[in-house]
Amino acid sequence: MFDKTIGNKLLILGKPGTGKTTMLLKLAKELVQRAENDFSKPVPILLSLSSWQNDQQSIGDWIVEKLTSSTGRYQVSKDIAEQWIKEGEIIPLLDELDELAPGRQEHCVEKLNEFLRTGIWCYPLVVCSRIEEYEFFSTKLALNKAIELHPFTNEQIQGYLKRTGNEQLWDRIKDEQELKQLAQIPLFLNMIVSSFQKLSLAEWHKFKSLEERQDYLISTYVKDMLAPGYRGKGPSNEKTKRWLNWLAGKLIQQNKTEFFIENIQPNLLSNNNQVWITRIIYSFIIAINYGLTAGCIIGLIFDSLKGKIIGVLFGTIYGFLIDQKQSCFKVSKSTTTITPKIQTVETLRFSFKKVGEKLPDGLIEGFKSGLIISLITLLVLQKEIGSWQKSLLGGLVLGIIGGLIGVLVGGLGGPEIEIKKTPNQGIRQSVINVFLLKIASYPISLAICMYINWWTIKDINFYQTLIIALLISFLFGLNEAGKPAIQHFSLRLILYCNGYIPWNYAHFLNYATNRLFLQRVGGSYRFMHNFLRQYFAKISSHIN
Image (tube, rainbow, N blue to C red):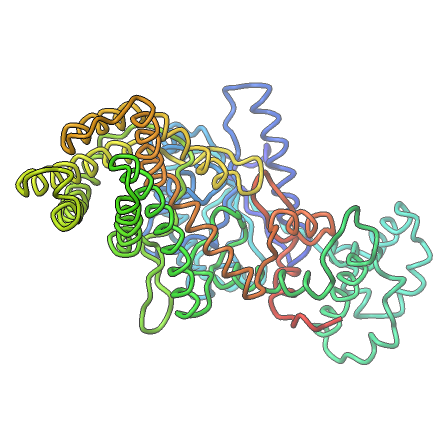
């Protein structure tokens, strides 16, 4: 059908559950195989139109945005994405037009037509939508052919039951009009076959509306999938429902279908109290790291308990006060606002543009740090250093040098991993990059040690120099790549303490995938069907 369509521009319509997305995935699989066999063939990309949020944004710009998004599945550079659009090297397979807000669906159709008719896109494209919504549009998509997926006929239902060895079910289904009506939908037919032994017809008749009976069928299916038989220890049924209820609700609230563990953001918090607590935990961890490291450095230089105590105090103050503007956890009067988001550092590439953006803040932070260092040396360590002028000037210079080096190290942060193959891969790579940044900044840290040796007129031996440089490198690595991991940990801790997620989230999501509630693609998860997502979003965790 796709090949016979003029220009390979196709619209797939159907009722919910009739297999529109399944057909789209089968088409994508076939197109991928073609591209693997012939490199000149375009590559299919699956995108959800439900994520088109800006009414003024063109479809071309939206596709580029989704291809380059750090929270998406493709994550390519903007230059590559724009080239793909220009050269027609991709086949956009656009699903879930009907998931947009009702008032925006037809406007999206108009934008799609603008994309198709203005000569921007003269290549293959496929769109999926529920037929009920599409029939009400006064504007139709300018595609060359449309197909409608119809519900199963009685003969097709019987054929499926026969092929799966469940012929006896037809005798029980055929006289139940609404059950037979649901069996016409492939998704529900599969649920009926999977859980019919636990489906009570007496209970079925207690429900009056089709929607209530549909929910009862899904509930029975969920019970059946939660029955014992999972390899390894799984959570209780109550916890499973509660955690899936929270996940489904957040995905619907944010108009998303895919979920990445590393993309957990503070907007998942429910209120400002949770934001404050998360911010305190994050600041405390940062302060402890800075404090202990600074204490070790100053203690090694001056070889005194006083130096260690001063170092700890300085580092702790810096962690709590100076670093607050970099925190992603902000509080507003009404709802949680997140500016900026948690940005993981998953790859290391030097960027002059990033250095330029960070330079003003780096100089300001370096000057602030220098003032604090100067104040400490003037009040406490002047005898060890000498004149007050040297204490003041040396502290300022040291702070500014540190700020500039921090900017240079910050310029090493690159884009996210292009294809995430495992859950939470981005956070793990961000932690690894803490150590890589330590190695990269170690020679510079040795140069700082030489400056400190001159400034303090201390004869720091070779081994002390190596250790101090290592500690300084740790601070540089922590500042750029370590903070996102600490932010992520702080946020996960609060979500766990509030009962929203388990401690080992990847293990649970894999468990839910094994139970056929979710499906996993690389490092991302999504509900098997929107019916399941909606069901879990509205249930209470106490439902049995």
